[in-house]
Length: 79
Image (cartoon, rainbow, N blue to C red):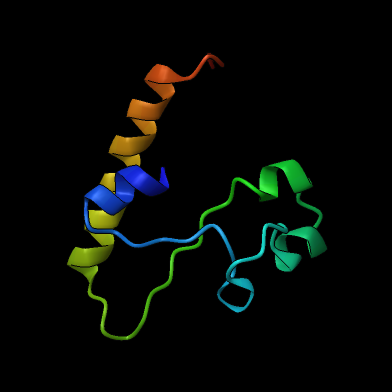
């Protein structure tokens, strides 16, 4: 997901902003009870006051497209 979004010009991260470089799952996700295995698969999107609705829509569309493509390749089939 990270690499596919990067090719579309969307920069995301797998770690919280305050723990860059750490392989540990987010302390926030752990605190709310997210399974550590799932937490390691999380992606952080950051927005600021300079982002606009068109940019958010672009990211949403890109995530939908990439997710659909990744599901095609997944060995885990969902009904």
